[in-house]
Image (tube, helix red, strand yellow):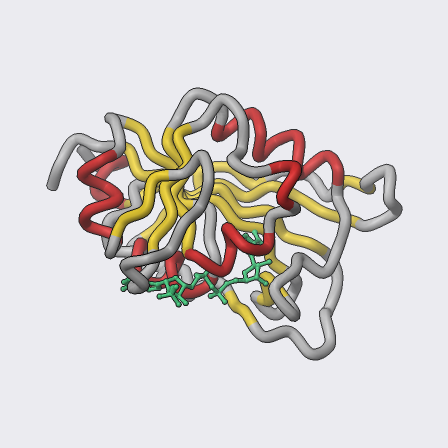
Length: 170
Ligand SMILES: NC(=O)c1ccc[n+]([C@@H]2O[C@H](COP(=O)([O-])OP(=O)(O)OC[C@H]3O[C@@H](n4cnc5c(N)ncnc54)[C@H](OP(=O)(O)O)[C@@H]3O)[C@@H](O)[C@H]2O)c1
């Protein structure tokens, strides 16, 4: 295993939904603030659809190296680096890299992941079409489970962090 720290960050509803119609179906400013904190200064790796889900005025995400994965050789994403797969994306990145979605890229990244930083959203989204991967309890230790909090938007949420077993046991 490499020494790289691969942090996978997502927010999910109670059923593991992460998106609908290429958007995130809730608004939790506190979670966005935490995301900014976790990612600033690092490379962020995302799928082409997640790149396109970012409002143009917010992309590339400032203060971060934006890396976009696509199979389309002609894809242009101003201010981002384009790669053809996850391995290439990880090779570009430094010692610490953050995987920021979406569903396809999370699934592909789970085997390389060392840390999961999950936000649980106390909602059940109808019509969701993108989902978080399974967190295998044999592979992951819940390192820290935060208290349930209420967002300024009224939504209840909490932060749950996982560390891969092997990292805990040395
Ligand atoms: N709740 C959260 O924390 C969170 C975070 C991020 C995103 N989201 C949501 O997730 C949804 C998007 O997720 P998604 O699963 O639909 O899309 P995605 O993972 O963002 O992007 C999928 C695209 O990535 C490229 N790709 C995937 N696997 C690849 C591979 N092995 N090699 C090369 N390219 C590959 C393909 O691009 P091409 O088609 O161009 O080849 C594919 O269409 C949206 O609703 C978004 O809002 C939620």
